[in-house]
Each structure stands twice: as C-alpha cells, then as structure tokens.
Length: 125
Length: 125
DNA sequence: TCGAACCCTCACATTGATGTGAAGGTCAAA
DNA sequence: TTTGACCTTCACATCAATGTGAGGGTTCGA
Image 1: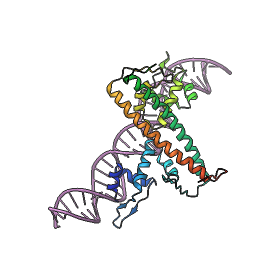
Image 2: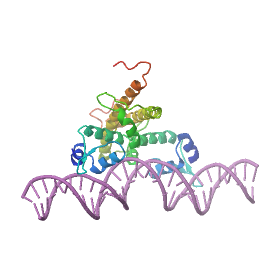
Image 3: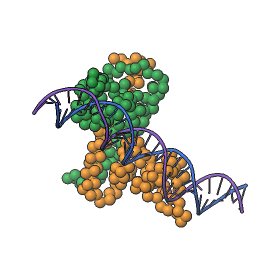
C-alpha cells in the first residue's frame, strides 16, 4: 500500500511515516515511480511505534527494541551484541519504573475521581 | 532548604527546578534575600514530577493532576471544574493505554532476554 | 489534455524539556 | 575585606517530535 493508505489506517500523518523511516524504524520498499510501498504488517508496526512514542520512549530506543518485539512471540533476534543486551536490560528497567509510576498515579487519579464524583456512593471512608 | 540542596536530594538540575516553578508545578517561598526556599515535602513532589515527565506526560497535564495526587490518600481537592474532571478522565484513559503498551512491550523484551541469554534453561517452549 | 489527488524531496518553523553562559547579588569563612 | 560558593534573572542554544509549505513529478478519470 502507499503512504496515504497507511496514514489513514494508522491515523498517522504521512510526514511522520517518513520521519519514522528516516529514523530507521520502518523501511518501506519503493515502487518504480519512487513512491513508497508499505507492507501490510507495517500497520501494526506503526501502531506499536506510536504507542511506544506516546509512552515516552525516544525513537533511538524504539529502534533498538523493535526487532525483539514480535507479537507472535516468534522472536527473530538479529544476533544481539552485548551492548545491545545491556541497552535492553536498562530499558527494561526504565520501562518497569515508568509503569510503576504511571500505575501509582493513575490509581490515585481514579480514586480521586471516585471520591469527587461521589459515584452514587460517597466513598466509604 | 535552598535550591542547591533540593537539586542534590532529587538529582535534578537547578535549572529544571526553576523550570518546574515557571510551569506552575511547584511554588517555593522566597527568603528575604530573594533566594527560593523549598519545603521538605517538595523532595517527594519533585520526584513525582520527574517520574511523570519521564513517563511521557507533559507539564501542562501534570500540573492539572498533581493536586489530586497526595500519597497519604488525603486527597485535598481544589473544587474541581467540569472541564478539569473531563481532563482527568481523559488522562486516566491515556495513562491506562500507556501502561498497557509499556507492559506488553516490556514483557516481550523480558521474554526475548530470557530466550537470548538462555538463562541456564533454554526457555521451555 | 486537463485537473484533482496522489506522491516525491527539501527545508524551515514550532513546541517542550533541557543545557549553558553571562552579569550580577549574598554570605560565610579565611 | 576579599574569595568562593552559593543564589538571582535573562537569554540564547539544542534536541526530538511534529507542523507546514514550496516546487515538482505521477496517475487517472472527465
């Protein structure tokens, strides 16, 4: 598919699809006329990228961890270097901390909303 | 305490402490000589801010949700407007999605590492 | 064959979170 | 009383993600 369709199906501006390519996150084929040609699977991939970006990971990191993330748990690893493994360990850690922080604060907000909106029951204190 | 101590205790450059103030996330007192004077409790608060920033939330949002986040579950709510509640609901949602995305990918990375490092047991498939 | 709707590259603008440095005030200890 | 370690404000720089527009090709249907 061409960039327009992928853009529509992922809700991502073409500008960003080109940017992700520039950052090495995706590498579409090229048609004879120079147009980018995207594989079907890139729909999921782009959504995954956007999710990770939204979660605060920079493209630099996403690029490193993407090859290890295949939904079908059919992990095709690209012969990892020790530095790469170290990066992954480190990022694993950071992600866990992020998750904890987000979860803690989300729960607090949820609790707050429960109380404030007096959800049919004024929060048995 | 003055900015230097808070900076050390939170591992945050003074520049950023001033920035957070400028963004309305913290509002230190001022000494007679013009120096900022930070309350003890701001140590935790700053770390919370950093955690949320690192998790991908912008200061604009953090500013809104911070008043609802008091660890002691002694939520002192500042008479919320409907828009504010809407913001919170929305952000609650975004945070949940972020958490899900991060958790999913973290688990995938963890699984990958387990396999690749052949953790004394080559991952019973 | 023309126009609309795509696509291309290039490049500059913006926004948020930061870094960094200049020019100067405060204060404690030597 | 001077030096050095703090602090102040102001301002410009940077980096990543994203917006936007110019200038120009391709394709397809009216």
